[in-house]
Length: 108
Length: 115
Image 1 (tube, chains in turn purple, green):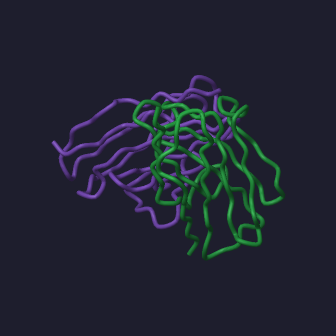
Image 2 (image 1 turned 45 degrees about the vertical axis):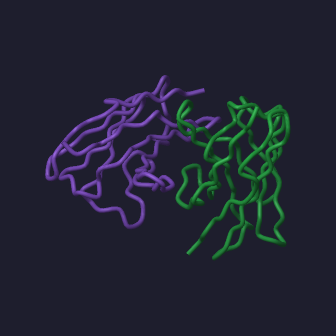
């Protein structure tokens, strides 16, 4: 199975700052079959990005995804207070679908 | 707006079978695939498996020997049965509509396996 490793584990930032989260795959994810989710405490994950770079319906354009092969990134250009949360990547290239362990974006 | 709601016992004894049902509202179960995903502090998010509206299934190999997914189109529901559970199966269980990625999720239901 494809193992996804996210970094950093935790990042501490202030509102208004820019953040880039990394998701590295143990083998190439073809056709950029990679998604990103945001999860807040007590809530289910929320789809942000699919196809590595396509924003899901209703997602603000401060969220962007990029990458291919084994290296993918999620960038939030200017952190809003509601963006402090956990972020997970997920590949759907091969079965079983797998998730990264997550990156926590916390308020500094 | 599609909504999903998990239901089932919150406590299951070790070695017994965990059974959950997901009820879909706001849309038909037909024509889509439906997944179960669980989340625990130790294992993070783990995809369990999916069932298509045709009834075909795809299971995570790590759970395949203990897992059965089924669906009832007349009730707009799909279900999970996981046998021979251990404390390692304690998790928050989500159902989701499967488009390879997951846009619609249930709120999750916590299942605790007691020894």
